[in-house]
Image 1 (cartoon, rainbow, N blue to C red):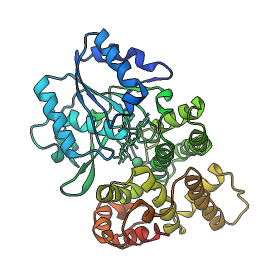
Image 2 (image 1 turned 30 degrees about the horizontal axis):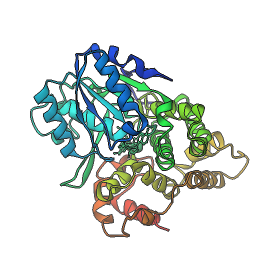
Image 3 (image 1 turned 90 degrees about the vertical axis):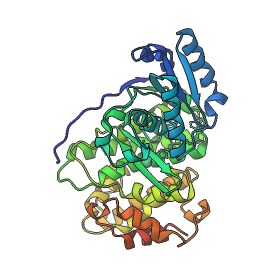
Length: 389
Ligand code: NZQ
Ligand code: ZN
C-alpha cells in the first residue's frame, strides 16, 4: 500500500429538499454568485426557478453562464473567468452534470490565475488559489461535485485534459437524488458505466496488498450492478437513484484511492475519443472497458479479474481462473448492452483507423507504461480496433 494523505474537504448535503439550505452555504462566502448551467435541463425540471427564488429571498445577486457543453470547452471557461472578474463574483454555483461542474472548477482556478487557464493543465502548482464552489449535482456520473478534477477540452488543439488541485474540491455538494429522476435513460446508463470505470481504474492499480480498499470497491461495484438497470427501467425509483448517486461520489472522491495510485488507462484512451469526436464519455468507457480487460488478461491481471468475477458477479470460485475472468468480462459488457449502450464504436460515428495513431500516441503519453499490464501506443491502437464490431 502506498503512503497517502487523506483530506476530503467537501461538505455534503444529501437527500430530498437538500437545496433548501443553499443560501446559508453561499452566505458563508459572500452575496454574489455566478450561476453556471448547461443546455437547459434545469429549466425544464423547475430547479432553475427554485434556485432563483432562494437567491432572491436571501438578497444574493447572480449572473448566469449558460450553455456549458457536454465535454466543456476552454472558450466557455474563459468566458466564465471574464464574467467573474467583471462582476466581482464571490461564489461559483454550478447546477448540472460533470461538464457544468468541471467548467466551473476551471473558472474558479482561472479567475485567480494571471494567464491562460489552459496553462493550469498538468500544473497543479500553478493553482495557488481558487474561488469557492457550491455544486448542485443533477446527474450521477463523474462525481465532480466531490472531487478535485476538472476535465476540459481545448477545441483548437483537440486535447481533453485534467486540471487538478485540492483547491478545486467544492466547498459544498448538494445531492438530491430526485433531481436525477429526469436524466434520460441513455445518460443514466452512460453515467453508471463511468462510475464503474472510476472504480476499475483504481481496482486494477498495482500497489501491493490493499485488501480493505479492494473489498470496499467490490461493494460499490455490486451497488451499481444492482441499481443501474433499475434506474434505467424505473427512472423515478428513489432508492436506485440515491444508491447510484452516493456510489458515484465514493468512486472518485479519493477514499478508495488511498494507498492505491497509478494511471487511468481506460480514461486516457476514452478522452481522445471525446476530444476528437465529441462522444459521451461514459458510453466511450462502456465500449472500451471490456475490450481493455480482455486485452490485458494475462497472469498479472488474472488475480484481480478472478476477485472481480467471484466477489462482484458471484461466479463460482471452483471454476478455472481464466474462465472466471472471461465470464466476468462478458457479464460486464452484457450489463452495459442491457442498459441500452452499444459495444461498437462505429455506431457512435467514430471512423475506423483514421485518427487511431494520433489518439493512441496522446493516450500512451499519459503514463500507460506504468499500468499493471503496461500499454504502448501500439497496444492502444489495437484496443481501438477491437472496439469495432
Ligand atoms: O446540459 P444540460 O441541459 O443540463 O443536459 C445534460 C447533458 O445534455 C444532461 N443532464 C444532466 N442532468 C440532467 C440532464 N438531463 C435531464 N435531467 C437532468 N437532471 O445530461 C447531459 C450530459 O451532461 P454532462 O454534464 O456532460 O454529463 P456527465 O456528468 O457525464 O459529465 C461528463 C463530463 O465530465 C468529464 C467527462 O470527460 C465529460 O467531459 N469527467 C469529469 C471527471 C471529474 N471531474 O472528475 C471525471 C470523469 O472521468 C470525466 O472525465
Ligand atoms: Zn470518467
